[in-house]
Length: 296
Image (cartoon, rainbow, N blue to C red; front, side):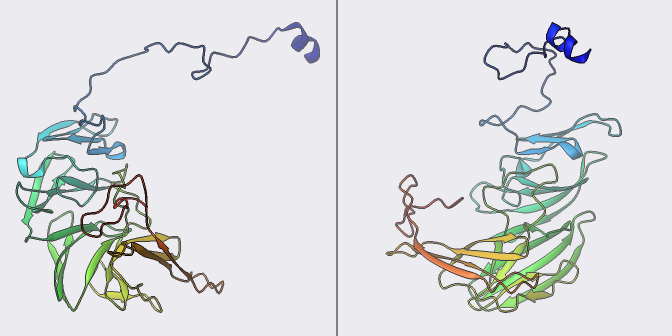
């Protein structure tokens, strides 16, 4: 009987599918945008899980089944224009917690951090940052790390993102840099950024370590020595840490080094050196090399 029905064509044809080259889409509904997007058609802050949408000086929370909507006019210092969490004029978001990173004209880097109460749509605390500050979000937690690094030292501070209280401060002497493991071209996501592998690392000429968000202690990675050159980026891939240097001035040679994995399978890691030359990329003013500073 089933075979007979199939042969007789008694079943209705499948509905039209978009993308089949024949179907013309029809508008089913239209809702006004609560926030006008930026010049590239996207928003600097788009966190659907928190119901938040922000661009320029406007930040809104859309009405939801459990959320009451609101609209907030941000101070000029906290205008939202950057897609890179931690940069000036950006936002750090995880769950229902939000920290805004401010910037000022004529100043490179962040100028202040401020906490947002997402229930009331109010800025609840603010801290001015010293010049040359960097702002990071700890991996797998929502404590904020600020760092001020100058030749010969780094001053690290941990902040409670909800209350704005200073948790600890630690001074590191020597040639120390803080490198974000979240790629520079990483866009803000539903939880602010991809949580896995997006922590920050302390890098010295001899060691690489992570900072404990609870007390600021440094946990140095055993057996992991940075390659010669300036470590430009760090990527955490599962239980392996991968470091890449910027191209050297003159030779444009770069090194990528991967640590051994920690799962006990005997992998000791690897190292690869190459000439970093990308014909499609502009020449870097400092090194003279053609390379994409955002993405290899």
